Image 1 (cartoon, rainbow, N blue to C red):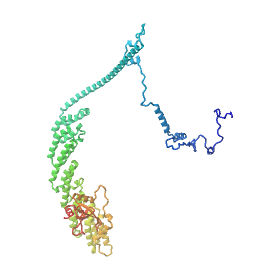
Image 2 (image 1 turned 45 degrees about the horizontal axis):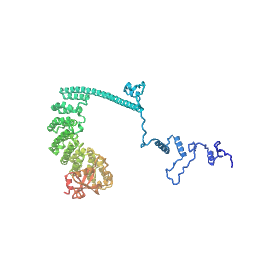
Image 3 (image 1 turned 180 degrees about the horizontal axis):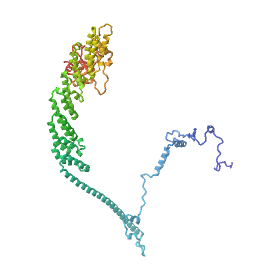
Image 4 (image 1 turned 45 degrees about the vertical axis):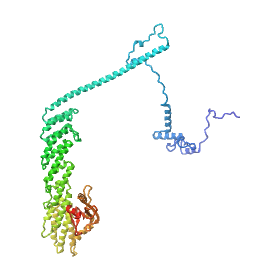
Length: 627
């Protein structure tokens, strides 16, 4: 057996380092890596080899730490380089667990508190003065005052108990004294406020007594405004109503009274409720009867003074009183409208005393009034002599009624019938009566509708006259003068002459091309450009807010309990879609129509090839019903 001590066994000498470097270390040194630094060009990579944490066989996730110590240190180093905070959840959970273990359980028995005794200085610091017999201990005398130690303990305990009770009583008295001092200061503050309140009440009462001496309502309301600025919490609505009641009952000028009532400072919020207030009761009992008497004796043809009064009342009256007054005005106007004939609605005078009320009366009442006006205007336009021109009131009604729809449904078909049946184009002896009638209505109808009217009714007659003139040795200078005459007449209506007379120029060019043929037939000529330029004949796009002519027709059919049914067919000459207006719910029967511009053409009963413009009147309703 050898007793030779092995080198480094007792720790006095370090174990020898392995000779040389490993293959991996030598390769890394060749690439410039230094031991202790990180990988990479800048040395920010890993500094230690990866440690692999092996889980036990058949062990699941969470049974062992997933990160090794080397991985945690490397992650902490990388985050420190980036300036981020590192959080090791496992380490933190262990710290929290140790911290919880250090706290005692809530179910454990608490340790009893150690008794604490007060000294004489502690007791006297609370304000309790102890007697000298308790403070001074008499050590004189030749014998003991007690015979046993237990008796001494009893006496000492009794003294301590008495001193403790005295100390507690003294502490309670000190607290009571502090509370009493605080309560005393509060009562003094309340007393000062009460004295100030009494002083203000006396001043306010004196100011109220001066109100009875004021005889002018304007001066009285000025005084109330001053009082409201100074005594806003004391001056209520009841006080003001009592002050102004006599002036309100004796007032004669209602307009001035309403102006002054509007100046009342307490009137804010009155318009937002239907509940009766003192001021609302005063208005209902004293002011409203005065306004009702004025409405009863009011002449509806003089609207402006009453409209001004109603505007003032709307700013002062409570809602229920305002509603009563406006209802009375509406009844007065509707009674006056019932006594008028339909011809009176064409005068400016009637419109002048109705239109101002349309911005004052409730929307429901305005709708009823406008419905009455619209029905009378429709009757007027369907029966009035066209030679008299448009009624003077139409422009006044335009802001509140759709005048264009009324003209399209009642006046335009009558003008078209007048030009088609009565008007004759004769260059040798031209009579202009019918043309002058149409010319009067042109500004009101509008250039777009009047252009379509001339293209449909006037132009076929104009081309027919040209055909006769161009058939036998025409004098083109005379034709030119005649053309210029009608160009001036059409231009005076405000329409574009190039649009209306363009077919005439084309017809003259074709007739004078020098081929010796007769001028083309007018019907064939009028049909050709419409078939070739169907997109131009189609109505242009309308804005979303502007109703189309079809919308107007559909609305009229809905009012008359009729149906507008699309037939999915086209008119042979114009290519426009056909519709059927019928009173039958099945969509059968009735009359076939097509819409062209702002005109409606209906098929003739006897001759199916004839289509004539018609008006939206009772005759069309009867045809739709099959009568």
